[in-house]
Amino acid sequence: MQTRFEVVVLLGLVICVAGPAPARSAGDETDRARTKHAAEPGRGESFVSVLTRHTGEPILVVKYPWKRHARPSVEVRILDEEEVDNRLIRPLFFMHDIFKGEVTTAVYHCVERSEDVPLTAAFSRGEIDFTIFGARNSLGRPSASVACRTTTVDPPPETRAAFCLLDTWAVDQRTLYLDLPSEYFARPGKIRVWFLRDKDIVWTADTTWPGTPE
Image (cartoon, rainbow, N blue to C red; front, side):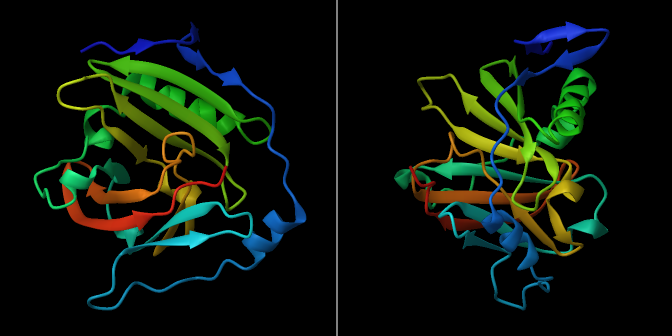
């Protein structure tokens, strides 16, 4: 299925829409300075948790040796109340099925150009609208996340996020600090997290998401 981009394409490159650069306070530098190299969770400990910054913004923490895997990625989905116990909900397999061609170009372009100015690029595939957000993350690095929202009425719309270039989100080879797109994950609730190796699900975990401050 052909991907429809809603941004200008020039010489094979997706030109993203620029917005104002976010201000970085002394507290941001303190956050990065306080980042510690966390070990892999012990037996029975969850692979995912939520860390709250001094600004009140939450960070999704993944503690798992992600670097051992080829083509690793993380996907996140908001769960409605009636979906919490539904183990049949599957990821999008974004890395394997969608992260190709123009989409790959757009993601890398947003990362490379977002060192000083946040960028976005939007595209659609079938009944899913995607937005790539390129910006400096909570670790101070240029990075990109992909927000996904279905346009269906029945079944109800879904909200997801995908992270493919994990090196940009890594504290070390066992710890990831992921910034979920705030506009899409503003409300508190349950989320499901998948860690994938290309097309294979390595593990799945649910956690409580506090939402983002207004």
